[in-house]
Length: 386
View (cartoon, rainbow, N blue to C red):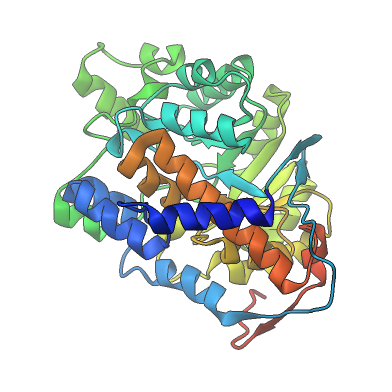
């Protein structure tokens, strides 16, 4: 996008009678007004006292850029390469579950936006629509499948096989959900989207899962999901077996410690997503951005590293990329956009994030995502994981 086009977009939004929210705070406020308390609280909140949620934001705010000037920044290359494919931006859609809470079209609207924007889409296991329905909605989009392990591991292997058959291009195994985090907002609102059926898409379409149920009633489905979705026995052996059973690259989502990153490499993992689940699992955890530099050092370029959790602005993405991430995922912002205006809202949110990122790369004195590694960042409170 040219500088003129970016300026035209800004003027269009300024001159609009009802401008779409641009900042994260405005998006969140608009979503709060649109959604009921239960769904909004579920999307917005973090675990416990929400220290991890705050840590994610504080981590970004601790870093300041020392820009360079008098470089020719008239042409900016924001493209990246992941698993042999080139994408025009370093942004990905995070695997946010149960999008039907935010909009009737849920994941279908999001994957259609992803296809239009040429941004990889990561679909959650706990989706309102099945992975086959998502694949049908946007067959040419780049889609990865985020896998939650199951107590009955055959269900996990079945879902991975279904994803491969449906044309998904990677498996993202989330490792930080061995049990549900302590989520006070949901207790306060007496709200459980799992029990309301918002996660049913992939489960009711899985033959292995359905064969475990005593009948096909809604109550049996809910109990079946609750019995399988948390998996405290998940281990490296399960991951090695998954790798034997799929031809797709496997990324681990939820890595925060450099030693776990080294173990991932040793076990043949193809990519790492540095994440604390958006602050929704264990409270009091290091911000994802604070964990990133040590993991980048430990991995040393052997596999791609993606930064997840707390990326609310284009400038946040810039800082993560400058610290060594190969890409970043966007979560809550796009869900708020979905709630406000469906596919169009998702596209507006992601376009605004991208436009801010592109402008910021130029103003920092860089000309590409790779060149951001040479940008100087100053941190005023160093808290790297040892």
